[in-house]
Image (cartoon, rainbow, N blue to C red):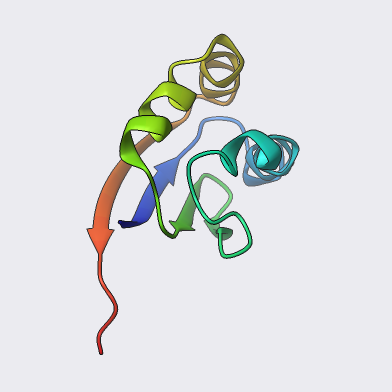
Length: 87
C-alpha cells in the first residue's frame, strides 16, 4: 500500500525534518525507505509519501516510545490517505 501523509506541527518544519531523517533506519522496517520523501508546504505543514507500506508494522512503529516522544515534542498531527499508481 502507498500512503500520502498530510501533517501539521506546532514546532517547525526544520525540526520535523531533522527528526524524520534521524528515524529513517527504523522506518525502513515498514516501507520502501528509498522512495520515502518529506516535503515542506509551509513552516507548520508538510507532506510525506511512503511506498510499499506494511500497515501493521507501521502501526507498531508509530506506537514506540521514541516515535511518541517525537510526535509530542513537535506537536504533530496528521491524516493518512492511500493512493495507487495512475497506470
